[in-house]
Image (cartoon, rainbow, N blue to C red; front, side, top):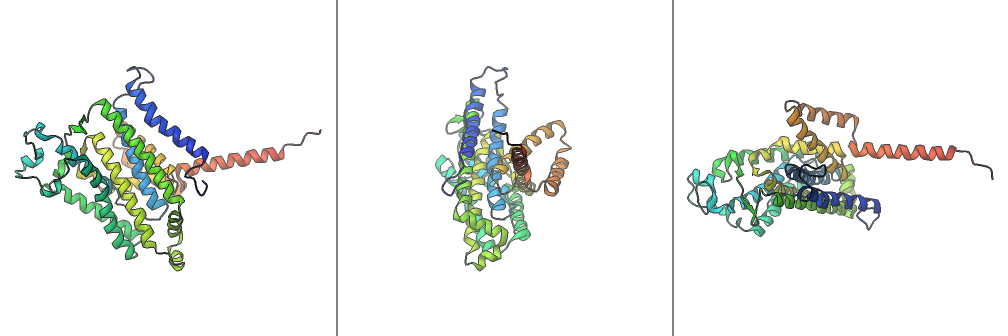
Length: 377
C-alpha cells in the first residue's frame, strides 16, 4: 500500500471481485436462477450470508482497536446490541395496529405489561432517519464516555478488558428487566415492515444482503484509510510502546478515543443490519461470551490485518452454523480448542499462515532460478 492509496492494484482487484460476488452474483443466483438448479442460492442462505457480513463488520471494528491500537475491548458486543435495539425499536413502531393487541402506538409487550403510554426514549423511532441516526449516536456516545474516562485515567491492558466486559454484563442485566421498556427477556421481535417493505419477503432479504455487503465494504475502506494515515501509525506505536509515544509528546487519549468511538459506530451499524435479517433482538446479544467470540474471530483470521478479521468472521461462523446443526454439544469445546490452537501455534492467524506460505514459495522459486545453470550462448 502506497502512502496515498488505500489498496494496491491487486488489493483493489480482490476487493472489487469480492464485492461483485456478494452484491451481484449471489443476489442473481437467488432471484434469477431456476430453483433446484446448481446455480440457485436457496432463500435460507441469503440472510445467513448477510448475517456473516454483519459479523465481519463487527470483526473489522474489533481489529481496528485491538489489532492496531492494542485495545482489547470485551464490550464490542454491547455496541452491536445497542445498534440492533435502535433498529428493533424502529421496526416495532412500524407494526402499528397489526400486533396481537391491535394498539396503534404501544408495542404488544407494553400492552401486556399494562403500560399506559409510550416511554419518552421511544419517541421518534417511528421515523427511519431518526432510528438510523440513533444507530450511530447511541453506541458512539457510550464509547466516548467510557473511553474518555478510561483512557484519560490511563487504564490499559487487562484492566480495560475487565471494565468493558463489566459494562456489557451490566447492560445485559438491565435489558433483561421488563420495566426498562425493551421487551425484557423476550426482546423485540415479530417485525413486519422495513421502509414499507415486508421484512420476510425474499426481495427484502436480498436487499438486506446487498446493504450488509456494501456496509462491509465501506467499513473496510474506512478502517483501511484510518490505519494508513498518520493516526494509524500513532495507534500502532501506542500498541507497541505507549510510554515511548508519550515521551515523544503525543497524547494517547485522543488517538485511542477516536478509534474506540469509530469502532463502536461500525459495530452499531452492523447490529442494525443484523436485526431485520434474523428477526429478533434480545438481551442475549449483550452476553460477554459474544464479545469474547468476536476476539476469537479476529485471532483466527489474523490480528492487525483487517482482511484477516473478515476471513476469521466468515470461517468461524460458517463452522458454527455447521457444528451447531451436526453436533451442537461439541461447538463450545471446538471454539475453545480453536482459540488455544491459534494462540499457541498460529499467532498470526490464517492470513499469516497464507502469507508465510507465499513468502516461502517465492523464496524457493528465487533459489531455484539462481541455482539454474546459465546456458552457453
